Image (cartoon, rainbow, N blue to C red; front, side, top):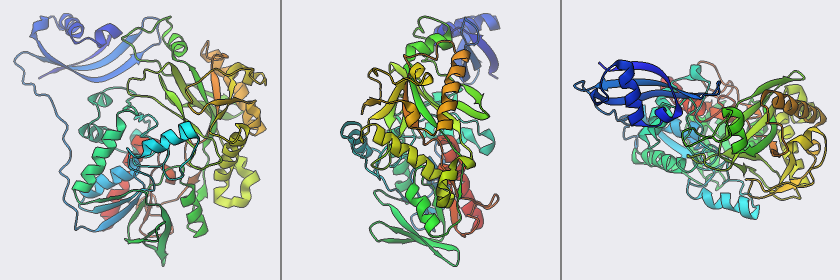
Amino acid sequence: MPQELLLQVSPEIASNESLLKDYLSKQLKVSANEIQHVSILKRSIDARQKAIKINLKVSIYLQGEPFQEQKIELPDYKDVSTAQEVIVVGAGPAGLFAALQLIELGLKPVVIERGKDVRGRRRDLKAINVDHIVNEDSNYCFGEGGAGTYSDGKLYTRSKKRGDVTRILELLVAFGATGDILVDAHPHIGTNKLPQIIQDIREKVIECGGQVLFETRVTDILVKNNEVHGIVTQKGETISANKLILATGHSARDIFELLDRKKIFIEAKPFALGVRAEHPQSLIDSIQYSCDYRGEHLPPAPYSIVKQVNGRGMYSFCMCPGGVIAPCATSPGEVVTNGWSPSKRDQATANSGIVIELKLEDFKPFEKFGALAGMQFQKSIEQKAWHLAGETQKVPAQRMVDFTQNKVSSDIPKTSYVPGTTSVEMGQVFPGFLTQILREGFSEFGKSMKGYLTNEAILHAPESRTSSPVRIPRDAVSYEHLQIKGLYPCGEGAGYAGGIISAAIDGEKCALKIKESL
């Protein structure tokens, strides 16, 4: 039987198989030649002391012990070409994993995606970056794979109680992700690697008899006697089915408006909003690793920080080491930021959303919009940023210390945000209470992370799409909408997930609930 050990070793040892075997041979009092294989089961960084250590959980096979490299296989997906159809609206992680689960359960998914396939989206991302042109159906948020495909592919989740995280990770590995995502404490695929994985998932859905329809936007949900009967597309086509998984993501404002117009029950939901802060990665490394030079054996340092400021939570969100800031507007006339990293996280800058918890009472100026009040609050800030930045996809920007001192920055250095920046006093973007909390919060951040509060850091505004501003309520047991039979609100857009993993889990659960109902 292999032995399992918990170790704490230097980064050099952790990253070198030969050195690790030498270290283990001394621990086990055997020759290094007697160690046949070492499997790393878990890996994390401990940077609390000046001498940084790597925590490892390993499984050690000595010579003579049976060992075979475990290959993760896909489930035995059925041919569902003639099976009962289930409409899945949205091809993000919730929709794609719902589709895979439906196939596993013997049902036929018909996936409806407003955007283009994962390759076709690239032209539209270039258009927004270079030409400031926003395609409302194909952008960083909409299109095959959803928002996560071109904004990093972070897989870390605290939502262990939601479902089987390991199953989702193993499915991603079976579709081509590196096995490191099963090992690392904060797994991450990378924007450069995700597109092929997403394409392979789609091809599997089609191979098994499912359908995937791109550039097909839902304009109506057919409901009769409070029961789903199908959908209508922008081309006027009707697709019939009495089971519909609605997995449209946190930015599908037209769907929220459709539901509100049809008097299908939805409700305003608090979310978080703020800025995206960019530092030199070398500065974050020096703060987090307490060193002048990170070296080759440590990854670019992330950070996570939370403060209570004036009774509100202010925290880092979607932190991207070695990453870039991207323009994530979904309609003309608005500016939205987000961040992403390539798989190697090898860019010169680090960025993170720094956001503040909102409350329902903050939406009071927009109460005439009812359940869409939070969405209108969000939209008003994005539109104001667009006007302040010259009605382009340039982003309002300010040096961090200048912002805390209410001083317009005389110059803004080139940042990773490709469309460019416009020097603006950030207080013009946000309501007064948010501006005050941000100013005080950055001062508090600087006390916790010495060196963080610096004019080398550039703030970009706004970071506004942290989660959905609307919840589509569903029954806690059946997962059906509280009012409409056969409608299954799902994932981030429905208010039931907060990232790739939790959205994928929710997609699978909705598929399972549909099977139970049959």
